[in-house]
Image 1 (tube, rainbow, N blue to C red):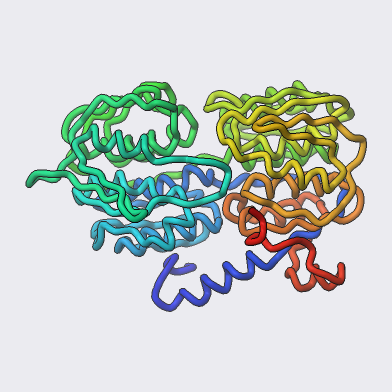
Image 2 (cartoon, rainbow, N blue to C red):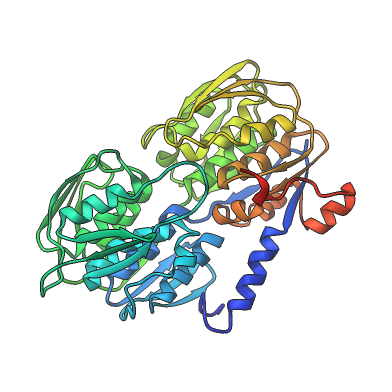
Length: 463
């Protein structure tokens, strides 16, 4: 038993762990093929919102397949600050939200983790009042919460944003949200999840139109249904929720992480390797697998929830445009750029979801890639070889892209920015080691000593 995620005596340990993550780097000696089997962890984007969804339950939630991530720890700290009891044992998390002792989430935590803002829906549904700081997270572009706010207002909530805090309450003695018909201007995953959770305990029927269709939205809906919620249409653009008075205890397992699986498929393709991935849900990877096959990568299903990537002889160029699901996922754009950098020809990447998500291009160019960026479009001319160099990950997926590139680069690549990588990849370096990659996590001091100077400017100095 690993004990609770947070308690009064664990603060120093948490700080120490965070500092260790911030001050460590990955050293990668490229050119080695991978083989064996890699286990895919539970989906980060499901785990975080399902943890928030547990606030809806007035009993115990037993959640399985929870990944070991920095973001999961932060979300646990947010819930604990609300009075929720949590206990973790391996990849299983027990959440007891019978008593929510405060409606105000801690500023210093919510501003570090965007997903924690989604808890405003469950808190408002349970207590009739919620105070939630505006969220933070990776700097990949504007992700406003106006869709969340307008949806909650349509359900009868009074919402005001003052001094960086979103204050919401349900007027009247009952303090219960009302069902409503809500059209989302864009299929925002966060807004869909926030409003779907809020609607589970609302009075009457709520219809969400132009809803997000991502697998993680479906996973959250299935979790709520398992607690007794009445939800139909998750996975389509129209979701209908019939509110109930109360949700009950549940034992639920989170889906595998499609982005982690896609990243390992790219690692296999760029190193010309053959290995097995499981568990996966192939349907969740349809656009990723289709694009890899277009590039000449062979991927076959090898049993139930299992994929095998075969050795790739030649990487072909391809064009990519990121879109909401079921389009090509924006979270796979950065790792794919690493792969396209070694394709035999010219490729084009159009990032249409976020306006500031191509900063990894300059870091890939440090490794010898030939990439030009104009606004939200990257022009990638494939090269025959990448060469190792010190690089800096500027966000979660950018860090993964640099690790992937380092696996194929000649010589040693040193990747900084692991505080981003560890937010979304469960022990990625250890999993790659098990596949045969030559990769080692060392302290920044050890890495600097080898080079004789600081590798790169500090993160704080990068605008």
